[in-house]
Image (cartoon, rainbow, N blue to C red; front, side):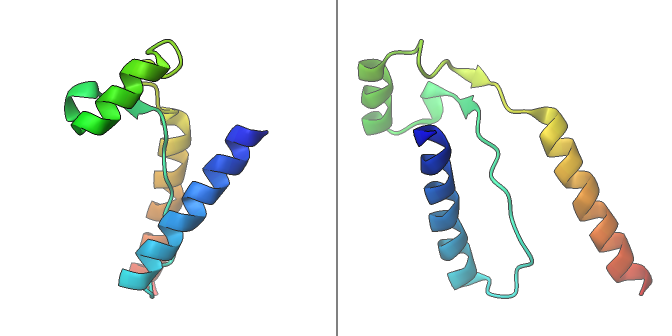
Length: 84
């Protein structure tokens, strides 16, 4: 349950930052699951090393079905806006 709460807090914080720059934005979604150590700054690489790769395996583990479903929803909304 704590992981779900952390995810919700993180998404709320990102939402607040995005809305500060783009107040008219209809929505956004985060997709977790991609870690590439070579793309992390040195501090985050040290954390990854200390915590252990078994807890945060590198690679792309995102839920592509979830991403495709979200993209389909966006496409329907955009299509509706263009046709109207």
